[in-house]
Image (tube, rainbow, N blue to C red; front, top):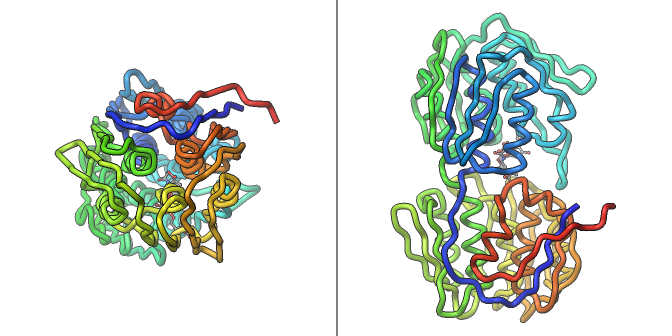
Length: 423
Ligand code: EPZ
């Protein structure tokens, strides 16, 4: 397993290009199941998770090829409705195929996703939503077995706002007979893009971008092309890299990003003392002289993203003062905390609340990646820690950041990818 070896303390400055949004691509790809034909998904990032979703679609007979950020998908040869455990266990977003398979083919056999590094991640809302649309669903030997002659529109309320369940149920409802109302739908930009893509394919969806979606079912859809939105979490991670390790008086410039999807983080970065300028598709950050301690509480969009929580804790570990970081979306998403403490951070955890007492410096050490965003926080800390930090098991980071070490090297970081010990 590869590792990153980072010699901290190098000041970062320069320009970084932001890639397409992983969490948009992971919803757009299964949406192609809904209609036969050829699709071009532009600005698709070359990530491990995209490869995993591509492989899953290929096991169903779908043609998938990614060339120069354009993902070409051909669903004319689809011949299976099963998402086997071997694939689903690698990535829980695989469950996104459930809704489209039932809607298009009236059947699906999808492995239940396992948990992930930070704990159980239920899919009850996905299952209940598709069952409410009229599917017969049973769980058998770790698989979700779903059948439906034709789904029929109904009213659905999500007690908890869920990105995945919103996407799955929306992709099921677009081909249902009649109208579906989804109350408390997720409003993340990735779900807005999925809705817009489905409309481009011929679906009838009203209320896009609000918490209330009205979907008039149609009899069939057709292929369409789309350009994936920019990855707001990759962009946010690089902004925090600039705030932590940016050259004093220097600047980090992000291009091909969308500041309108990053409002909460931008406010917080200005609160800690960074200077931010924004344009149509760029953001410039001037690092703060010193980092003020600023609390953060994650929330569903447009609140502060849970996917930025680990990176924020890394930043606060060097702040002047004490900050409170609370995750209200995932209560146990703190596997990065013990690793950051190994680097010298002063953090105490009580349930889903981390209290971070800023320290003067971090000191390099060997640390272990456990999940995607935790890995990002360890790399950020390594960039500023005195001495050498080794971040092990970087396959986690490759799931969601394309060539992260190359992008950081281009900003001046001393980071190398090395073959790690097999264990
Ligand atoms: C999506 O996961 C993202 N993944 C996650 O990003 C992100 O952290 C999460 O949304 C929240 O923003 C993708 O889009 C592929 P949820 P998802 O359903 O859809 C509970 C990353 O780092 N819930 O919105 O799985 C759940 O436990 C990844 O890129 C149920 O209770 O998240 C959580 O508390 C990590 N039952 C809350 O809802 C369900 O059936 C929000 O989860 C589904 C979810």
